[in-house]
Length: 168
Image 1 (tube, one colour):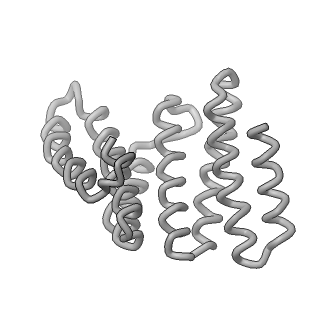
Image 2 (tube, helix red, strand yellow):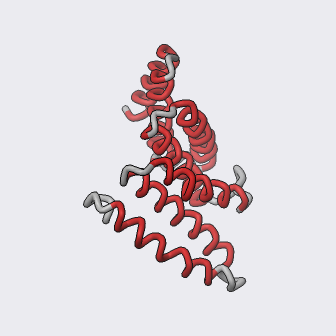
């Protein structure tokens, strides 16, 4: 809600207040895995809000890379739950967006490729969930834009066209 109103700094402050509470929940065996996963998601959200607030480098270093590392340490695999796979893909999307704000397009391509890979898994495992096709289109367009920006124009335009076809 705060993001929709452009109140990114306030969103970051509120998300940061959740971290110690989730850290306490990690101490309870019944909640440990859930709290750890949720904590990683909150960290990613704080990072994205920080990037939108105009501090993408801080977002990457302080929030998004640690969130990605935490999610990978959770042992997310192609057999993980739909929710965990979506959240991992979202983190790659947030990283790509932050690098895009810095005009560092090679990492945008790398993160979009990872997001696309996860989207393929989601589409294959959950074919009735159209949201995964929309995610794939988003990653495809992010990748296409970055490819154009690094001079791989034909490949970029092809990726943008495929993303557009996915949406249609």
